[in-house]
Image (cartoon, rainbow over all chains, first blue to last red; front, top):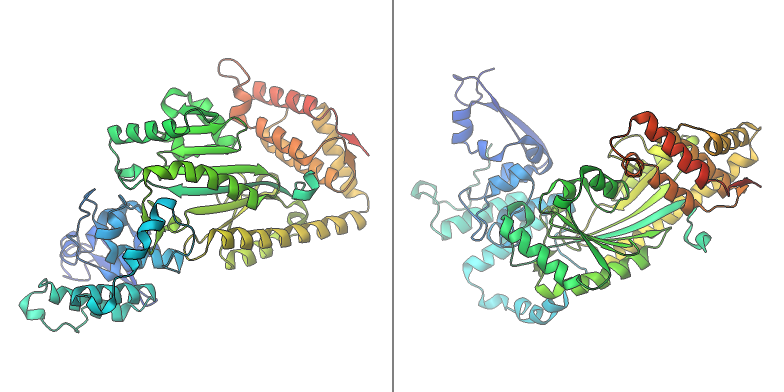
Length: 179
Length: 333
């Protein structure tokens, strides 16, 4: 079978993504898989079970500042590396949590040591938020509600704000989730 | 006493908490030095509190398998060179250290005792939390696998559903249960035919529900299944033309007199005798005592009572002897 992307090389990589319940299967050669970022999300078991890892595609170069895990590592092993990953790679981890748990807010017990710190953390006022914090909060909210189109738009706005998009893609609301 | 926990149908209850410390990477990313640090930390916290320390590296493969058969340790823990188990003297609490998460605090009680198991695991949890757990205001307790995040709690009950299984209504019941967020699996191994008609029911979701809700909801589901199983058993006895009583008596007879017994046959026969006890056909023993025999009769546990590397015939003979002696007090009513 030839690669769906270039039509020249043999397809050896099967990339499955599910976006809004629609399953898309692509057969790619290693070069195109790499170009499209599909190779970093192997194997498929996770792509199938946690499709948002494949389709949501947050910054792939993002690494946990403590253990060095990337989202690709998490997709490959099915395991998160350390507590800090939940902070540094949150944008990619929250959709996975939402998929396997359906809910994204803990309502149970907290360790005694945490209770005292709880109040100042949640007391940060929304009006004093920076633009980046606001977008991040709305992004998390959209992911939690599984509103992936809104999440993708918010993510692009965040990227634009952080100056991560090439100049040619300045339009922040243009969703690039065509795949 | 046993009746109050529905122990003739609900064999055992387990509550498991997944916990990680904030200052160490999760076990999959830990260095050997960090793994040792973790072990020493946990062992010193519980040091003199009637816990036995078992380092996986210092156990033989058969000794590790015995722990698996007794549901005290997972296969995964046994395969980890730095894995450690802390076991309370009464074996009600076992703490797996360095499995998928830093800590898996497990509390195992006979019968249906969800609240009690929750309380017991909670007290150990409080002792170990002083070193600073990985916890997030939104996501709760942070775990290596996102399927455990939140409460980190997996509560499960082992049920002996011989009645529902024999009437063929098990499948539909279990499918219904599955739709409400509970996982159902067979006694040994996942997805396999339930050995001895034992199935385990546990909560699937760990986030967005409080621990009390998990415990309460599971309890309700289990109690409704127990009720159904009980009514099926009564109907079986009422409608019996003699075939059922014959089978149960045969099973008791074989267990009392056989000279060789495979573990598969043991599970099947013990299941029959448990049913006989539950419907008043037999007397002199409790379901919990039969469950204990089933555990002691598992392959590695039997092998641990023999020297060298016993053949399967030798194991079957040792198992038959265990059962003959063990069922001495079991009589026809």
